[in-house]
Image 1 (cartoon, helix red, strand yellow):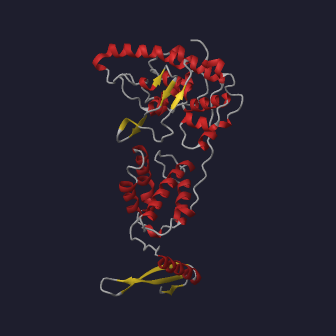
Image 2: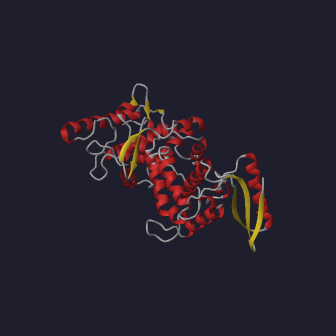
Image 3: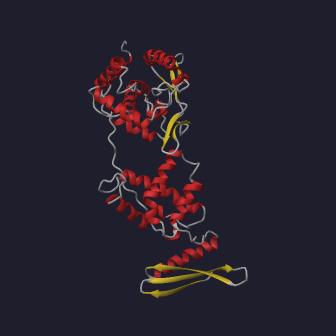
Length: 388
């Protein structure tokens, strides 16, 4: 293999290499400018010649990074992720990536470009909420995930030789405090839900709270539950679908994202005894509304007209209900951590708990184990076995 090095200016060298003949039989040469020392230029040329010898060299594609990002989102990533995830990717690209990388050749993107992009976003991220300051480390980590995918695809489709993301360090996202309700708090919350029941302001958001406390389901799973998904005879609740909410497609039901999320959970029969009055009440409401009822009667937690509940709206209303009950305002997800803590106190091991929670990896489940031993020590006798 033939190659040469020519100094263009101080600290700038052009490397050139032979890469066969064109259709007219004339020799073809490619060249590249290397910023640095002659030794660095020689190292780059030696690497290219070695790759040519092995047949692994890829000529840099003259495609702009912005163009490649659009192509990835429209052709390569679409269909491999959920609609909501794709929507998030497009928002990141439109609000941030195109501005930063639009006119930079894909083959010229270096790890230093991306690292500086992270630094700039953390310092002054151009927040869409209008507030001053940078993006959070968690948000920039989402950018990192998308960029990693885009450059992996570039390598896979022979657009670049090496992935610059391999030398990029994403910001370290702070560990989020994952709290759970204490035994006393959960007793108070469930008692409040049981006593107040129907209310104009909260609707029947006490039902999702009740289900989450007994099953540890995610809110999107609770709101998608149907009466046929619970079995009184087997004492189980099955997760067969979830609610997906996107700005473009609205609310719809879809299959769980992973096989682990599709699961059947054994539950205490007290849950079914507490759901029975609600089912009778719901049937009565359907009969009263007649044609005004827009659902098919299968959902356990429909809105006032039988339709799917919006998870965002439900989450806000549940937080308000929790606050009105007089306990800490931890939010709906705290019930999932409370359930996990209860199971750990029962002696359930991490692998079994992973299956109950529907986690894809056990490391996620392990984050639920830090809650203090004082939590929920008497929950079984104090709440689950308590009479109506």
